[in-house]
Amino acid sequence: MQELLFNTGELEAQREKLMEEAQVVADAVQQNIAENALTALEQTAYQKRYDELATRYDKLKQEIDSLSEKIHDTQSRKGSVEDFLRAFEKTPDSLPEFSLDAFTGLVDHLTVYAKDDIRVTFRNGQEVNA
Image (cartoon, rainbow, N blue to C red):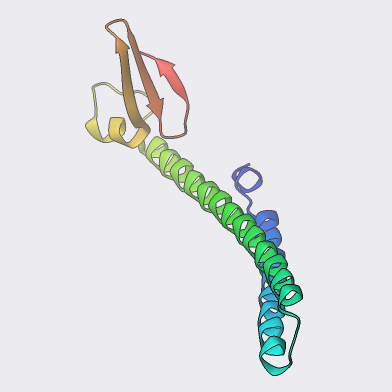
């Protein structure tokens, strides 16, 4: 189930495709600059072409950054779930007394909204009222 939930293969493939496209655009920018340096181009046309390529590159870069962030977030969540499961597996079926190790291994944080409204958020993201 974890493999299905935290698989980043498709996101990584999309990112790789965008990175290749960004490299093609970057090469086109360099070619455009070199051509302008070697021949007398009409500067308005040159600038328009340069701006179009730069805008396209910036858009691709934003998409790449967004995918990278999604991949990182997914991998971080996977790590948190794995840590939670390892801590949970070490916990005996019944706890005869409070164990600080079990508590810190399973609980991410507590939120106190009011005297009678305290919520426990576990490392897997699940939240319960205490």
